[in-house]
Length: 223
Ligand SMILES: Cc1cc2nc3c(=O)[nH]c(=O)nc-3n(C[C@H](O)[C@H](O)[C@H](O)COP(=O)(O)OP(=O)(O)OC[C@H]3O[C@@H](n4cnc5c(N)ncnc54)[C@H](O)[C@@H]3O)c2cc1C
Image 1: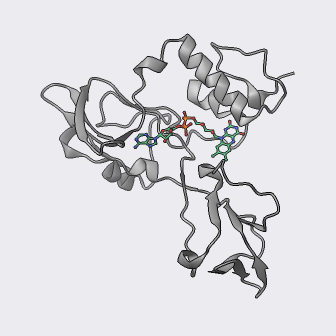
Image 2: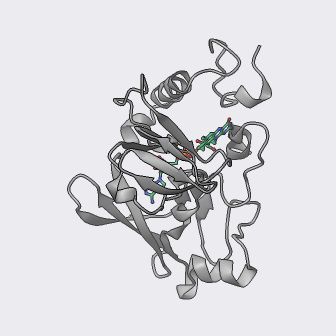
């Protein structure tokens, strides 16, 4: 049985998921296969950062600023339609606590998991469970708000996410920036979470306010 949360893309059903809540590896495998099946993979340019986009009235095109993260090289590409699919929960909140530079163990964020670190026989501290927050680090231990000291080889961070993926510079018609647009509304506005006025042919996938907190985000992405 497949529950609502696990419904895959509507145009690519998958009766072969092994269980109701399949593993990350299985979900990744599913999406990789769908991308290959619909011939999307060869169009993807990996390891590239989108740094900005500028509307050009004369040509009715977007000038997109990109950086090759392997070489550091900056380059520009023009397009008629620009789609932002930068995701919702992407960039983890930073963990900033006194003594962090002196900590001698591993610090791992759940969103940047290190597969080569074993938890076996280690003292593992989970940060982000809301119980007795950590106030300082020592080389092999943590100090908490209540005054406790716990030995620590590995700290697993679940510090949540920031929305910094929306900081990318976006300048629309008449020099209007995305930041100005949102400042005027007083919140991250997008019509039906998809488009913004004065930003022609620019669209969001899973844009502002599309997250629901229940059911699959695939629904939000497809609708
Ligand atoms: C811990 C966690 C648990 C979750 N659990 C569930 C769940 O149970 N059910 C559910 O439905 N959803 C869940 N989600 C949400 C789900 O993972 C996302 O909503 C889904 O992955 C969104 O897909 P996407 O393709 O829109 O974005 P993503 O899969 O986030 O992909 C966005 C991509 O854009 C890239 N990117 C961002 N900015 C730039 C830039 N400037 N330049 C270049 N690339 C950029 C990112 O690196 C990333 O690769 C969870 C998310 C997290 C973090």
